[in-house]
Image (cartoon, rainbow, N blue to C red; front, side, top):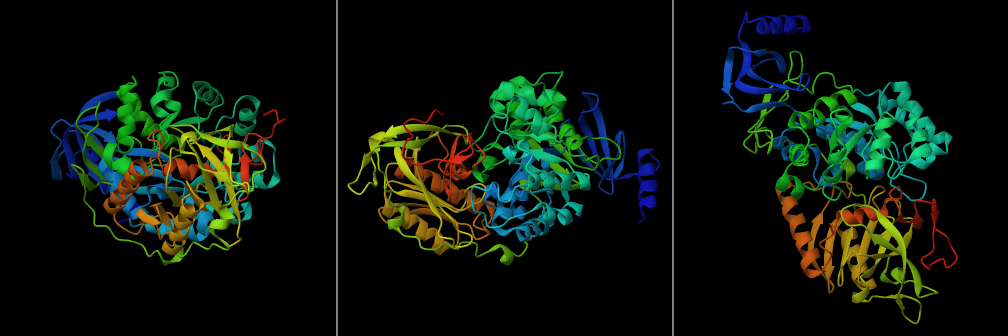
Length: 583
């Protein structure tokens, strides 16, 4: 059928001259344009909404007075952080009413380069969930670490011409933008030439530095962590994404910033979310519940999860229930709990009462396997040669992925190695390069993790995804790292030279090739072992917190394969405390 013929059919349905393909009857339709609720039917024609009102159809479905929402949009998410592939990710989100996600695949691209992007694009085609991709902007994230690949501005030109690429992903190298580094600005210029938006990433950035960052046309930020940060971003014209993920839940506090005057500049996002989190509490539907609990008007909350995101990303075919828009529709019981009853994507039924309806097919993963290449690793290399008992430590900040720079006095062995003391709550952490077998390895001391025996290691360490490990002894840490190398990537929890729990992640060392339920069960077991056997603090997520301790764009101290890095001052620092430094 030609497009003219499709339009003719749609017009005839809208005007009542012929029956619709499908009519969802007796709805309470949430109109995000006029902020009202309209009782009526929704008529669908070839996956598009033909009309709302009173209609008959070849297929009629009685909504029994349920509220009809536009399909929910998660405005920023990393599929890889769920540890499942796009096909399984669709099974995870769609029953919760999320019909579109704006995904940044910078995890897998940091490991596999543009081969990883190609894999994600192809796998997404097998998902019912409409996955829109942003092109990763910072691969590697900074020059202070080694990733598996490098993507330059010249490399970006061709992917940005691809219609499946919505824009340029979160621009994490804020210092490079502020310093007007030419190679950094070339990437922004590539997005500008392609006419595509750029996502931001500017934690703690304020005042003139934030103004300089925003002056480049960067459109969003999901890293606002305080009321002041939110207000400054809004005043500069940025969209503020309120995050509700597994480790970062700023939405709970920052929902108070939403007012009738500024609500249209807020979006909802997950960023990084584990499958157990989604299966337990939901997806964007969970964010809606938090919004309403925190006093945001329900229809305003729905706007934030639909129309606002669609307008931000120029997705003019969705974000509302209106004639000519895609048939992305979610039926919910009420506008407080947002319990999802049925979901349509492009007019096709895809979920009902928590069940995902489409069959799941998988794309071949062979192009993104065999990603762990480590050189010259041994327990001996984890030994420190400290010259002082006074050391710099990374203090964890519960509920966030921030870490603070602090100092402590520790015990040392005769050769200068750190001696673990359970009473001090300080453990060793190591990052080991795993992409090019460079042999790079760096060490730090972290406080607040709680671990007092055994070790945890994983090949998920944002954003370069080298191996990161924390443990109570060199031997335990080495055993965990060796197990990861043997597995070809994943997560492992060990104690007394034995594996307690593990999750193999053969897809780039980031994702499993198994069903989401299996992954959820393995992650649950890993968390139980971390909390109950290794005594990791329940104030932190034992996996998500650890994997973000390698991200050198999140203040204050982070550890890369090149050393302990001071994010605020953009420099490496020694493990021994700098007695005279004024930080």
